[in-house]
Image 1 (tube, rainbow, N blue to C red):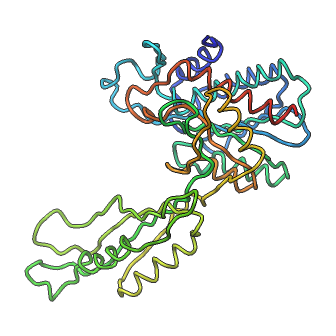
Image 2: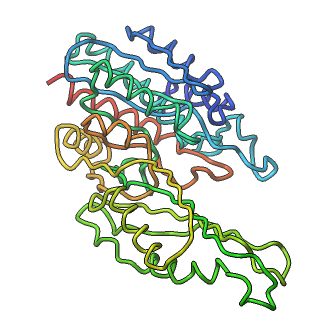
Image 3: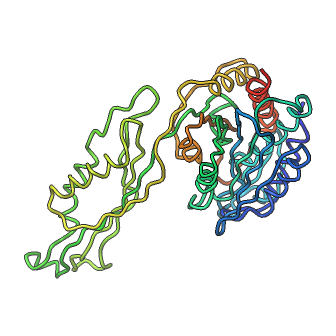
Length: 378
């Protein structure tokens, strides 16, 4: 049976066009639910980002649900079968931007907590929500700043479930028990501009850079390990030229990214890349954007509880994977927190006609509630 509370709340959240970093009132809607069941609310506004820290209880252990109210832009509306911010049920699916990433998860978390507290008003430990409106954007003023504030006042999250859409075919078939780190380099190789017919009077930065780039793309950075695939070096963008065919350009700009395992650190990656560039005697400038270190929850009480909860709902244990992009779990993990990602099927996230199976919302709610029962009642 579909829980109308989960479906209704998901619809209400989708109906708010909260394109990152705008929250558009989503968190206030969630606050109404949480205040009614005894949560203490802290609104944390940093620059253009709206954050929510809500807590019920003062004792350990502290369990938190984490998620984001912001969504990516809808793209061309005429390519959608239904308006992206008008939640629409078609057959067994709820359509709308954010249905899977991740307003469905937020609704399931809230309803699961409401159910749990109705049965266990005097549960052990503490419950919390950490919600931001800037996970899909620059992530500068979102979860990372809330975590820094919590650490500063020694308010440490022991266990956290992040509602990112982790599933592949059916809800709960995959949970993410870690994520790779991510670091981006913006490289500018300088040369000397000149007429292409007189190359001896110029220095082509593209020609200078290519051997180094080939070396960087062929390095075996690591072999990965039991939980992580090998580190990957990828070039998403190259820019050069003046727009005409007879001019050697003065510079060559390359952006590259490495998604790296726990076998490496950001510093070791930087050092290796500078070694390669210096060995090729390039004149260059290199700036870095560090998105986060890899994290891993290999064992522990949270892992056990989540696996058992999924198994009880699906009658099948989930696979443990660390694939995909980064998530705000990387910021929470730096507290020493056990972090697991469990959410809807990710097949339509960031696409037109994003949708979630309605029965999956109910199953996800059941999974979240069972996790709470295993962690905060025994």
